[in-house]
Image 1: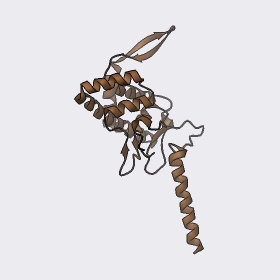
Image 2: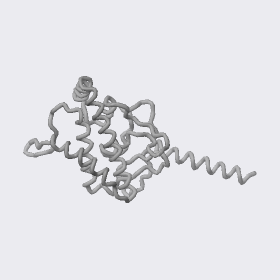
Image 3: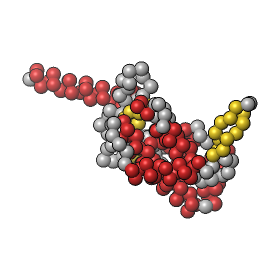
Image 4: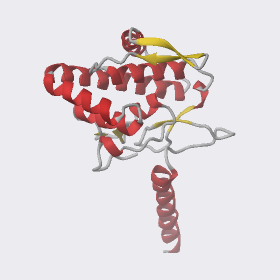
Length: 211
């Protein structure tokens, strides 16, 4: 899927899992000139609101914290981008029936170890669930993405991770179709691009034959 002018706050959520949507914050990932939706920490927060993992109050708290500590926010942003690329490579390898690189898994595990320090178990109506601490931490978004990645990697849905068949898109998604037949991140985007290319090729061949 190609990037548009709307930026991080409007990027399409087609992955089916938080970690895959995060990996998809680059348009035309396989092209020579990919387009990144994330340019700074503020974009990271905007994407998190779009993904539904931060409310407006929490987002503003993080933005205020980033304004007070810009160097720290920039460092967190670069860590987030490095993790994103590792996640992308891991799941692209999984989708191709390959084996992820040790360095990428190490980076993920480092982020996961840090994230798990901020988890807790809470009680809700005689049941228990995982939750996160309430602290205002600049790397909070990384916690959630790392946990989502680990959850998918250790779930029964791992064999449903697929990659868009478009030559330059490269977006990842969870194929929930009954026969695992989904080929495109979006029929309205890459699917239509493929149909248009096929139509153009058929038209060109017909014109060549009729000469």
